[in-house]
Length: 501
Ligand code: GLU
Image (cartoon, rainbow, N blue to C red):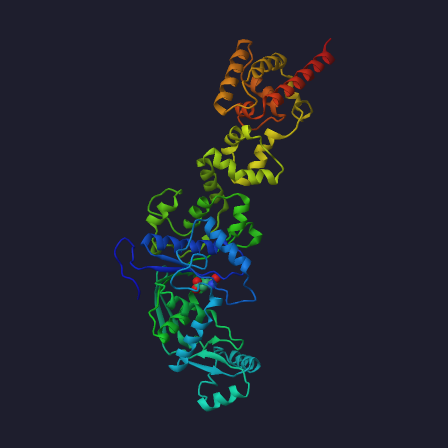
């Protein structure tokens, strides 16, 4: 077993790996695997390796490979070694490691742990059916195990194709999983499995073991869908004479209805969440706590805090249920913490996509106005629209609200106060003062409370709800405000005239 305990969950010389297959974009489940590896490596002062498992060349795609790297970087889960940063244990793409797999096949053949098998697919299928019909395990019957070297040579020379099978040793395989505890597999249920295919490709279990051994991986942290592979992998480590890593299999992420989290539940890939406007720190915080919680009761933890507290042995084995409401809530907290300039930088692409543009001098006050409202950055256009849309307060469904008893006096006063604004837009603090001046003047005329705020809000924004009034004062623009007040005044005058006795 590699690595020795040193208290506080810290193990020396830790090398972990995240080994995605680039057959799609980074799913939240895989991102959580990457995160647990990252937290464990950082907690132990170890090394995280990124290995791209692209042996399935038909399904692998370099665009996915690039998007996985981009998503990991976005989450700030940068590996210490990998195809992009290099390292001493490369190459870090399985498609570049064939020579290492070939050498390992030769080693197993030489030691008698592997043998060529000429059985055709049809024959294997037939035998499998027969075994199943008799209620037996459909494992390979070792027809080719006893072939002599001469016969093998002859058949190969005649052009027959062979796979290479691993000779599974007898007896149970037991390992101590870091999350599940002791797990035992009987080798009776494991037939001599293929390690090299007729097309020259290598099986997943075999390539992973050659790589984990070659990269001196000490801890394998991955999803529990890989538990059954672990027995085969441990057998291979032993046959190759290599020390096996320790394993920790975390639960999978389920949707609230208990099914596998999939597209029909909404966003599932890190790219989807980024596009909607979730922040990487909120994602990381949320994913870390899906099956684990630091001793502290809080819900919000920085990456540094997660690293300091992480303990793989405290990760729960119960399924993790994806609760988007909690993620939303956390994301909102992270948004509230951003500097206004940074928040503007992040919402700008969402505004541009919705065709909204803020004048440079308008940005700060408007961004501040929406900061407390946003759940995700993608909500920004809905909240910003009020500051840029062309609208007529006298034509909106709430226009009747302009007709309160003293609203003409109020709008006159507002005209007077807002005309004196020193610039087109005002920072929040100054806008607050301007509004206060108006409120005081109105009060002197006996106008206050709802009779003041309601008509004023409608006159300014043509809506009966929205951001705090002072943000409208600061962010709408003086000329817009004055033009709308004029329209509102004319509307009130027309109404009065039409209704005068
Ligand atoms: N490439 C495998 C996958 O994406 C992971 C292999 C492993 O972690 O052992 O599922």
